[in-house]
View 1 (cartoon, rainbow, N blue to C red):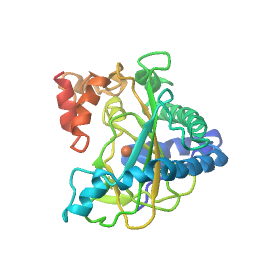
View 2 (view 1 turned 60 degrees about the vertical axis):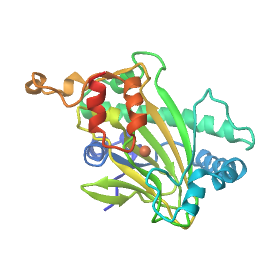
View 3 (view 1 turned 180 degrees about the vertical axis):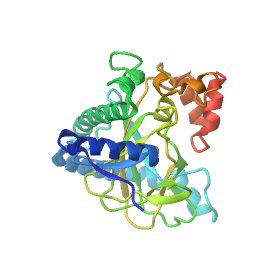
View 4 (view 1 turned 135 degrees about the horizontal axis):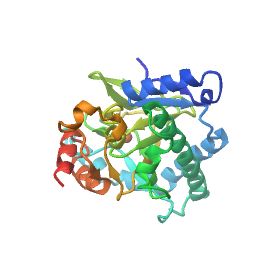
Length: 303
Ligand SMILES: [Fe+2]
């Protein structure tokens, strides 16, 4: 079993209806799909790979070797349940960028700009498939017109691990936010999603972008699109590169199921998904990231 692969360019031709249906099915049944022909130039992706690897080697590797997880795994001969074998750093456009890797900032900003546009296209496809007005999800995440949504890119590396049986690359979780666009390693695997009780590999395919939906898409779609549990296994071989970009709501945005998707008969009974402010959700999420999402919805309902 492999997660769906979708040719995004076919949205612009004879096969539009079929492609829309394919994406709808991927969102409803998987919460994850791989996009090919997504319009991000290969030349840019090649540069992203190059500067990310150089960035790790020049500015991150030494710190990772001296990190808590490395020291503990070495000292303690048992499983580490609350740590990840991961080097990770998140970038927003206006944060302070590292300066030790030539071309890193320029390349990653260009990449972020392109990925944000791709996220908006993917959200428009979701609008259409859900029967919502064009731009509905974007508007919800931006708290109206304007550019208030949170867009960031997380650069992770999963270096070779001497005891992969004792620590995860990244423990299982669902994403808090909206749409996640992942540019994963060409060769080194490790990402898995939970589907019908089974962990399934997200196969590395060169130059594809993996899309997955977070908790806020689940809420907005009133559960039609579920956020999917996923994890990263550590491995003795390779150093897996993973670049995840997030299109998330503004912290001030109010999130609720789209009224069009709430069946009338259910309007009188309590909805599964409450209406809440995304910033409140995040304050719960940071405490509960690796726990089931349902109690998060309950916690935020009470706020
Ligand atoms: Fe994720």
